[in-house]
Every structure is written in C-alpha cells, then in structure tokens.
Amino acid sequence: MPRLILLLAIIAVVYILLRRAQAMPPHKRRAEYIKLGLGIALVTTLFLAATGRMNWIGAAFAGLLVAARQGLPLLSRLFPMLAHLRNKSTPAAGQNSTVETALLRMDMDHDSGALQGEILKGTFKGWRLTNLDRHQLEQFFAYCSSEDADSLQLLDSYLQQHFPGESFSAGQQQSNPESSNAMVRSEALAMLGLSDDATKDDIVTAHRKLIQKLHPDRGGNDYLAAQINQAKDLLLG
Image (cartoon, rainbow, N blue to C red; front, side, top):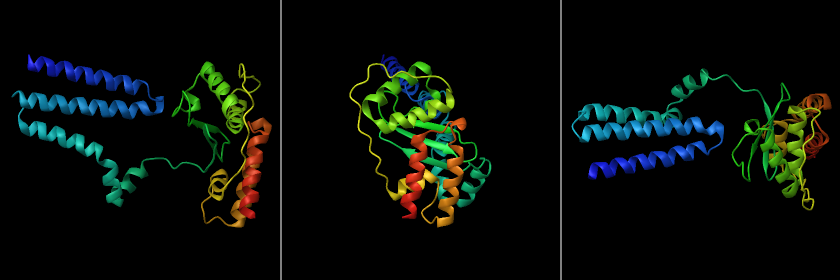
C-alpha cells in the first residue's frame, strides 16, 4: 500500500508539472520538458535502486548525468575554455536594437529590419508575438489599446510588417491611455543597438542605418522612427 500511495503521488506531481510546462510560452516549453524528463529519469532510477532492481552504482551514474546537465551553465562560467567551445558551435547573432514599453519589448535586426517582440504583461505574458495566432494578436491589440498608447504603437509596427495591408480592430476601446515618451541614456543606447562606449560617429552611423530600415515599404512607421530620432538626439546632447 505505501508503494501504491507513493506511485500515485509521483504521477500526480508529474501531471501537475506537465500541465505547468504546457501552459508556458512555446519557446520555453522545450527547456521545461527537458527538466521534467531528467527529473522523471532520476526519480525512476532512485526508485529502482531502492527496491533492489538496480544497483547503487547505476543510480549514482544516472544522478551524475543529471547533475552535469543542470550544472553545465555554471561550468561554462567557471571554465572559459568550455564556454568558448560551447559558443563556437552557436552562430553569432546580428546587431539588434531594442525598445521597451510597459507591455512589450521589441527587437529589430539591423541587417534585415525584421521585428520580433515579447509580451511583458497581461494574459500572454512571456509569449513571443510570433507564437500568437491572428485571434490572439487581436486580443493583445485590444489590451494595448486600453492600457498603454506606446505599446499599442509598437505592436502596430510589428503588425504592419507581418500583416501588410491588413487592419486589426481593438474592439470596444476604453479611454485612450496617455503616452509616455521619456527616454534615458540606457534606453537610447538599446534603441540604437550600441554599447555605453559608443562614439559620436557610432551613434550617427547606427541612426542612419536604422532610419533606412524604417521605410514604410519595410514595415517601419512613424512611432519607431520618432523613437530612433529621440535616441540619437539624447545621446548627442
């Protein structure tokens, strides 16, 4: 009987963790599934070892594998050589610009001009815009329209690029939220994709490159152009 109770408890915990993983944003599910699989493997190994179906050497080896997998990021930081080898197999990412509002964080690739966004608040918190279907995007559009004007304009930039010529309805809008355009130096640098030691020439070059990407034919709009101009003005004083 105790073993049956323990087995039912384990099944219940696994079910809860599985449901939790399924509720996460799609781009985070894989990592959760891996953690869940490793946890199940470890528990199974310990159970078999405790009941005499597997010797403790096998259990220790399985536990070592799980610990090594979980500790890989720490090992990479402790040993620069491991980090170098790990990063060598990963393609280098292009330069990005980032603009963040109360509800949305948007990245723009400097080479292609492509926009990718992550939701920071609301029902779809943690989700990437690319993972939302048309109906979900309309829901988030309506949410932005009632909560934050800057987020709404930033989302509209993404929609213009990915759904050219299509219109999104915000449904029954509430009173228009106020827009806050205040920007600090760190935000301006992120907007232009620059580091803190950027020179005047770096700022001018980055601004020129980004403004070219914001042509209406490439999915740009007045809001993003205004943000980039504001970032340049702030950094150049």
